[in-house]
Length: 193
Image 1 (cartoon, rainbow, N blue to C red):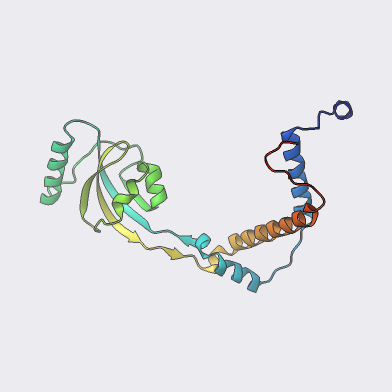
Image 2 (cartoon, rainbow, N blue to C red; image 1 turned 90 degrees about the horizontal axis):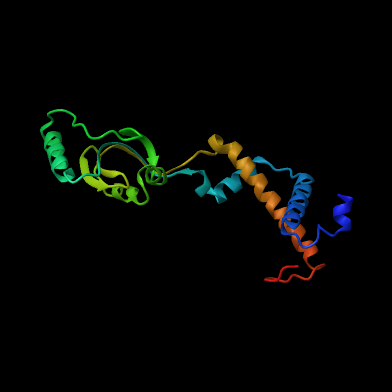
């Protein structure tokens, strides 16, 4: 270490600079102790309700048809069977299964491909709809239940609120510290020193 310092290897090294900044942040955060009460937590919770909400979710089933030239014929046959209530028609196997419970738009897009959740916006409940194309093939969708957006109760997310509140206080303390020492230095943007 001493030889490295003698050779000046610590100078003009972005990685070493970042690491020193990290160590300073840890040092400053480590000395940070803030007392807070229930009222502080509830105010933080109220100010940040978006963090503590469950988005709209859907429970649904689907019949999957992998990409092929005869999909239109197969879809028409399946829709006729569904209307006639003959039996539950078989599609192709889908790697994630045929039933999904309380999935939000982000999760639906993750499972079926970007933008697939857009199909759910205007679908009727307890009625087969489609076909809808995904990155895998075609899907007929049957929505079992829609769960509206809901704010999680304070008591249910209290530990998460405490963590978020603590993090916000640490960030604020770090901003105050940086502001207090900023005038000691010349800040040059866009030039590496």
